[in-house]
Length: 530
View 1: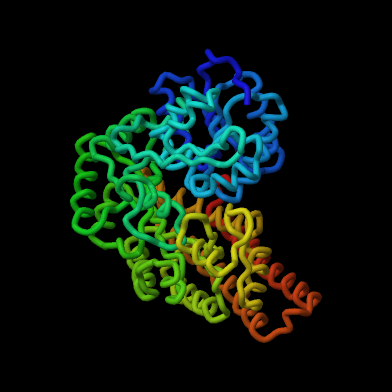
View 2: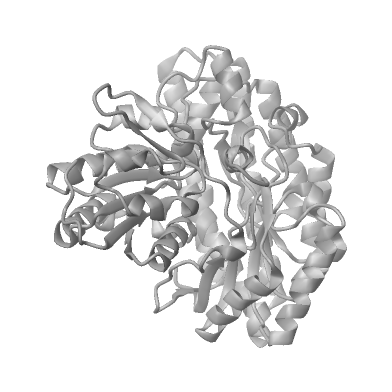
């Protein structure tokens, strides 16, 4: 690795910025505070002719032009690791001599594998990188000084063996600068939009959760709250620039026990004192849902709750360490529905130990909650990430071999594995079901934002019809699932032609249901742009 000009103070921070997470923006802010010229670069996903191939070319051209001393790749999603590694290799082929480093929860648990997979990669910055990124920025061209950078994993000169420094101590959230943002702001459905963070980490220990494993490994408390005054200061600054809609990018918005009511009240009073009328979304777990607290949050702008239900099968809930019950999950969704809050969650139908019985339980749960659920079901699977208890169990069983981004696995029960593969074809990304799910989610935001800010334009009847539309689609989809499950349980799953024929029939039925739902949605909300 050769440096491109020791006096160059430019640093690129690369991330999929459209996801509105804060990791790269926070790193850029820390670097700017330390005196570096940190610039954000958007590594977009593939979307036709403006996809990740074009984004990669733009980043390469930018790096060739600016000749930065350091390029940091912030990894949000495991499935994009191969694209990041390909981009890093392409930068080297283009003659970019900057130090190239990866950071994020997943890289923190797989530095050896990443450095082995990509010779062009110089290092992996593990742990909460805000603490150590400025130290790396000061010496990107001096391997002798890398030894002193907390959390840095790198190849030893000569032997090539990977050395990994201890992760840095966590930084207090109030001590960090506000994330670097585009001065023009971001809009969503006609409203200024921004992501903010009121806490870091989580006080639970779900076995599948990569962020939970990350914060439990870091040096410091696994859950840290930001002060209300600091949070309100940032919200007010964004509000004065036109932002009205906020996404809280917290793993766990509500603190544990008695502290949550006091914190919610303090937040509400601070917003009122400053005259900030906002709308927002949060994430929480089913065991955090308390009607009185939700009502207070709704008074100050809560629209939607991403609730960590994950499963409607008790055996799976126990496997994942969720610490809750199926009945509690049903009750929580009923509570949210009664209070007029839109709930959303990913139903993790599949995991390495799935059986037809666990899938049957999931389908029964989804049928039970249709009256309480106002959007479209998602059908997904557990991703097994390095560093998690689930990964250790999988590897202890001699499974999950290969690159850990994430660990690949096959379900031991071949009939459950068949359902998993069919599900991916029908309900995966870029399918009709994926498209209508996104459109109905946007429709809800349009209605809820109107209810919050322009009540004269909100019609409860329209909201009721949207919920009924989602319910019809969910029922039709579950009918297809029932046929799929019956075939997997009794059919000849090794007859490839028959499996393919039936899969095509189910895909056609689901696509037809989705198209009917799209037509109904267009008729219900003809003024919306999708």
